[in-house]
Image (cartoon, helix red, strand yellow):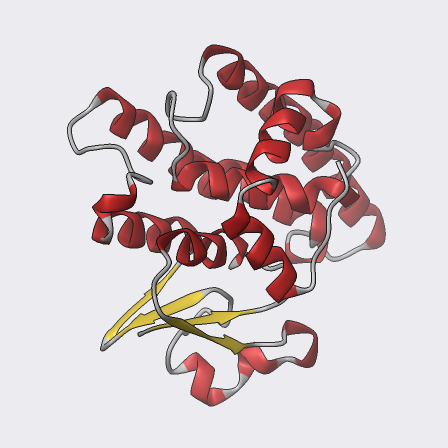
Length: 210
């Protein structure tokens, strides 16, 4: 049985949805970030970063959303939620997963938590403004990709699309929103219509009207 450490609407959303897509047995262990549970010694012993998500697969411990998605999708190849190794689609899939974690998600984090990068209110506002401009350009890159392919990596949905859905959902409160771009809105709508994603949203107490 997998164990997923999660927080409502956190970076665990994509993994939670993937577990539902895989129809495998798993349990959820809530780490309420608002209550500081991520800093408790028992959790830090599992994930020293003090962040969610973390996945336990027996004695194997994995953190970082993209890494968990890669691990799970490869471990369950029958679902075809990861392109086959050495294919063109695999290269694109890995590219976008890493890019979203390394670039888009970090830009989102800078906007949401400018205090990590700057101390004074004025400097923090500069961080937010810069992040908003960067995010607009990054959404445009994804919009252009979805003009070329049905899904991020080709003509089939993959775990990378679940990751994009997660960040698109977060952007509801950003000055630059995914849903304000037609192809990204269509992408989010299609992912949201999947029964597995609807179950994830219900279990986490989330909703999104597009």
